[in-house]
Amino acid sequence: MVFPAHLEKPTMAFVGCIQPIGAVMPVSEIQARWATRVFQGLAKLPSMAEMKEEINKRKEDMQSRYVKSERHTIQVDYVPYMDEVAVEVGCKPDIKQFLLSDPKLAWEIFFGPCTPYQYRICGPGQWKDARKTILTQKDRIIKPTKTRIMHSEMAHSSFNMLAKFLGILVIFAAIYVLM
Image (cartoon, rainbow, N blue to C red; front, side, top):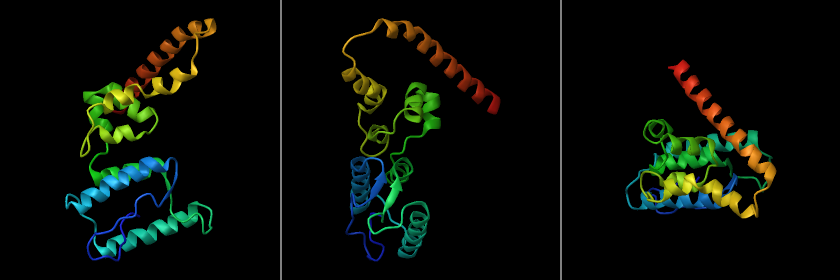
């Protein structure tokens, strides 16, 4: 839904002409990254026939899932679409790989919010501070809302730590049982 299927060569891309169930700017950014790679010849598009088939399949899916109206024409679910384009760019993080090499980062990517930083961890357009930014993103969200520590919060902090520890144990036990 970025490149017109009828062009012989990929010389035009429509970036941001989409209505995600989520933020449009990160979608536009990853689409632009993909378009740039295609224009540079670093990524290839499928054949015209394959693209047209994919377009028809997506149109049918959108019509069955979303409101039928002239306004709702190119709707997508944010996370699956971001992951799909990230695969084309070559920057989708591999959670399984990070589980072994950096479990803390894997945890944040899998259970935390889906932010554009995770598509800067690896692949083209990699950013050296992406890991640090992912691991501290909740602090940047919560800290501005906190003006002082309340006594009731201090009592709950040890309970929260215990709950997190037990959650991690349950996940490792589940992984162990599944293996």
